[in-house]
Length: 115
Image 1 (cartoon, rainbow, N blue to C red):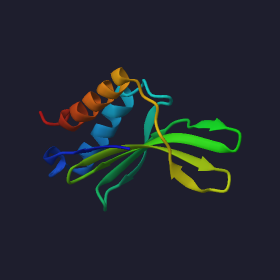
Image 2 (image 1 turned 30 degrees about the horizontal axis):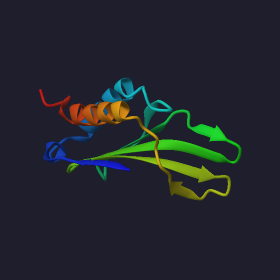
Image 3 (image 1 turned 135 degrees about the vertical axis):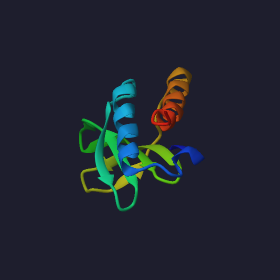
Image 4 (image 1 turned 180 degrees about the vertical axis):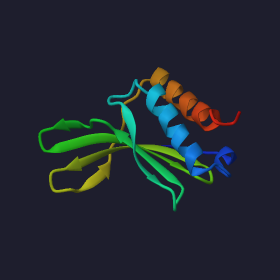
């Protein structure tokens, strides 16, 4: 799991969260699967993005989940879900270059609506 805490999201609107997720969907195209917004919870101030489509192999589904919260947190986690519905965190294999690019894009996304 990679988590980024920032005061820049303290006062964002739900519409701004949606714009951030759209920006990330067009920018973060270099992971195992592309990310897309799947849920916007305006009452909780949360946008959830997931791998679309997820990676499926045998009786397992592997995917990224990225959550952006009003108040200041952006977090990405790699999950594995088995056929029985059980879900667990699993390691994400990233090169140093991909990790640096991902961190840069997460930080840039938070500030993409600043202007």
